[in-house]
Length: 183
Image (cartoon, rainbow, N blue to C red; front, side, top):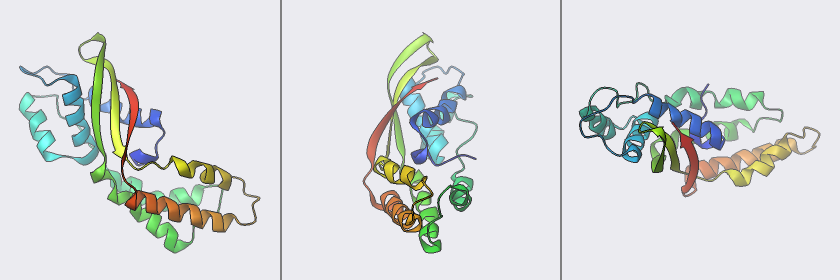
């Protein structure tokens, strides 16, 4: 099951987006730069962006990713993911709000490929992939603390953590997060 891009570790995000390059192997008469092509493909892959898709289709066969991320199964899996954790799930109302919060983010995630460095051929190289989304790393310590199930206030901590996480997903400003991608 795919996870929302914003909760994946940097390497996993890179692997998900790596599929974009693998899906575009043909050469058109006037191809965009590798950074431009990868950025357009990310828009199609992440948001099913129609204008980006049209630009890629105009380049010829093989430029448009064959799939896009279907975020709904990921979002639908949040309650089951919460139930599988080693700590108490948040209260039902907090859990529902948390499960709904990721659905607001996919349309807002924007990625841009930068600084292409060829790695042996024009089609394969390394990028710096900059994506915008809220920084949830301040929650990591509280999340890891919940793994210690001997805490007497684990339910209250779970409620507080997922309330904060929901607020971050809904309201926090986007920051630029950069990961290296090879493809």
